[in-house]
Image (cartoon, rainbow, N blue to C red; front, side):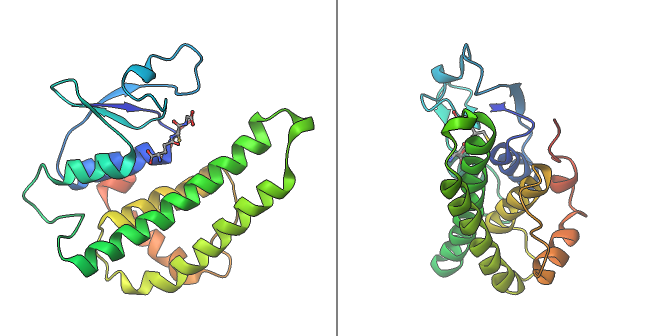
Length: 198
Ligand SMILES: N[C@@H](CCC(=O)N[C@@H](CS)C(=O)NCC(=O)O)C(=O)O
């Protein structure tokens, strides 16, 4: 199995953390999805990383699908619980974390890639407000996670570290529970070994 990856992509990081938590070693194929001549489209027509190329040359995307697939490949503690209530709690936290990333990346593309005279500041503010509300909900929810590192919390680490990495906002401000929880995750190998790098 080979992961089309970029060292700065938070979605890729989520997949890499999941693989480590599942005890799976992934081959990494460095890929810049923004390069005009990228061959990524042969594996993912959406031209996004992560994409996981299986040994039979089939490809899986996007990150929630890849993570759930990896979780089927081991017999240990499942990151996607089978029991319905717990499963949907985890999926919801993942959706919240992925939504933070989607909003942060949309705002970044608008602010850094779009020609300056075409930038839409209201759009950037809308994304920032969504990030802020989602962080507030995580601050309320984090006390219920019970110290287990399933797909919800894994996704949250990817999102929070991206906010730091791209200096999106001071998310720790007024969110002491989330900030404390985040520091406790750094004793995990999956978190330490997947820090984003430029
Ligand atoms: N929903 C996708 C999002 C993946 C995504 O947006 N990846 C970014 C890198 S961080 C990308 O490849 N962007 C290239 C593009 O949008 O063309 C997932 O969860 O895998």
